[in-house]
Amino acid sequence: MSHSDTIAAIATPAGEGGISVIRISGSNSIAIADRVFRPAGTRMDALRSVGSHTVHYGHVVRGGRVVDEVLATVFRAPRTFTREDVVELSCHGGPRVTAWVLEAVLEAGARLAAPGEFTQRAFLNGRIDLSQAEAVSDLIHARTRRAAAAAAEQLAGGLSRRVEPIREELMRVLAHLEAYVDFPEEDIQPETGLALVRRLEVAGESLRALLKTAGEGRILRQGLRTVIVGRPNAGKSSLLNQLLSHERAIVSPIAGTTRDTLEEAVEIGGIALVLVDTAGLREAGDVLEAEGIRRSRAAMEGADLVVLVVDGSAPLTAEDEALFAETAPFRRVVVSNKSDLPQEARFAAGVEPVRISCRTGEGLAELQAALLASVGMQPGDAEHGGVAVNARHADALRRALMALEATVTALRGNVSPDLVALDLRIATSCVGEISGRTSTEDLLDLVFSQFCLGK
Image (cartoon, rainbow, N blue to C red):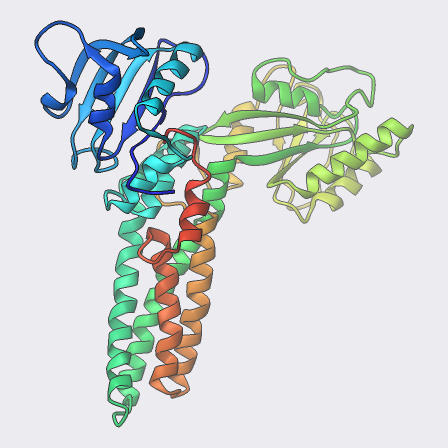
């Protein structure tokens, strides 16, 4: 794949809509657009004669026939997303006409863009760094306000502003160490070594602070997998319906109605919760129920959060007590349902259930707040962005910390400066991977292959 080619792709979602946009980027983008675009009127002859950031009405022609009437928007380098010449053709939004316009552009000399290739060019041409490029994808796929706010913060350089000072400090210490490597007759004085150790320890503290945001980052990007468990007829399906604000699960007084897991997503306080309703956990009455219970336990094993529902209007049973023990190792919120009835359930010391009524909706707001609190959030945090690293960043941070700790150990042990510098180079390189200061072709392919076509 050559980065000197002029590329094109449909930049809007598939399907029917008011308009579709075909994006063209590269040194020949304006010339290629001129081969298919015929301006209406006599004010201009071709797009090559117009100024940057201007819009022009006309038609796309293919094989001498008009394909569609379009608006052509011209962006001249370097003030474009890719820092290359860019033309965007806005046509009618039907899938067939959009394909015709794209085919005309490809026949005129453009190459079909690979997934993420426009954003990759923005990175390669220095407009954005690698963490900002990833934020483009995160912003497109954000399912909640908080996820979108976090992606926007990263796109604006929030993560880069945290990472770059750390990398620069490591490079300064590395330069100090390499001075000793260049002059082997000089030994690192004890007081100098201790000063370097302290600087590296401060850098390590900053890296650990960033690494702590990895859990929130995963939840923002993937959602909080929340599994609702309890014995039959405790109100699990009713709770699912209440949180979704519509009837999704069948609710019946007959015990064991739910035989399989049921998943639905909902936004609560800026966090996407993937709610999983499960079969009631008890001694199975038949083969089908046994399979449902097996799937319930499997869902619980993969959960970020377990919501244990009990019937607060009845004394706790042996099955309830067994579920308290089984769910204890998980991040858990206990819900006491049927608060509109006289309460008979008595809970052990240290267990503070959220009391709700799935019939009246009482306590639902308190439950939503408890679900957010379980992941360290408050209801008012929905619009707050902040930095939340992704899995790739977290891996780089872990490797950087390992190398940094090895550097500190070597410095404290008066190891040869060239060996100390070797570990520090690794740490510096790992930190540089986050923003793309240190990158390989494999790393770039991994990042941009996850983008949608046209972005």
